[in-house]
Image (cartoon, rainbow, N blue to C red; front, top):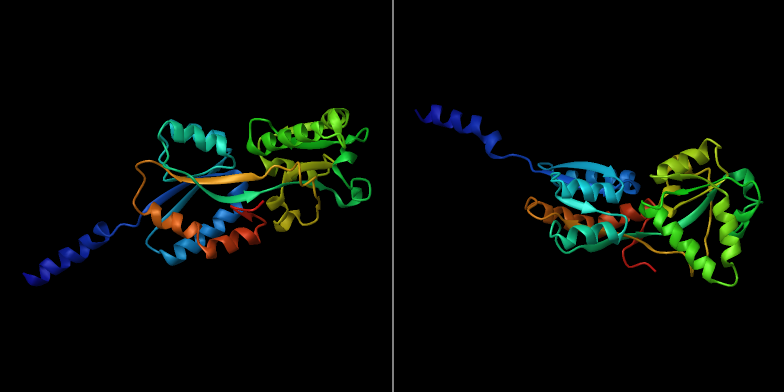
Length: 255
């Protein structure tokens, strides 16, 4: 009888000790770096499984509003996070990472495009983010700040905007057009030029005083799994921050 009872316990044990499945909804610009961070977390927590879902921050916020089963939300701007916080769908957010915009150009155009002012040249083909996504809204903020500075001015910005031939919903689409030679330059995140397939592109710094800091807030989704706390603690650890830095991200307090 004791042997039978032991066998039953052994059969039931896998059902009793179930791995936690944690769903992270994250901005698409975090695709590679979060993939590596998730692997590092699972190496430390082999019983847990991380499910990653990437899209634009606004689209992810909409999915969470519609009841998508997320445990953790990492946005590429504060607006999408504030929207969910206002309705109580996420808990108090914390700043996880930051990023900056850079001008990415093809190597053969490096001598012709050395600063933001060169984007006003006639017949130049420029790709930027759509105004509805974070990279696009940060780009418009950059333009607005340049327009107010006498060293650049409204006329320069208008000429730059006339050269915009592509407005993309994802930074990776801007990178793809650059690599295919469909555009001459693109405004992307610093971290996007850390990937192996983008190392051939040249990064040109934008005016520091006008370059907005892109913030990546993180928040636990209300009523998420208890294990989410351990995941947040790991993403905030020095081990995870080293992974983020290797992918070109700045820490949350960078200025």
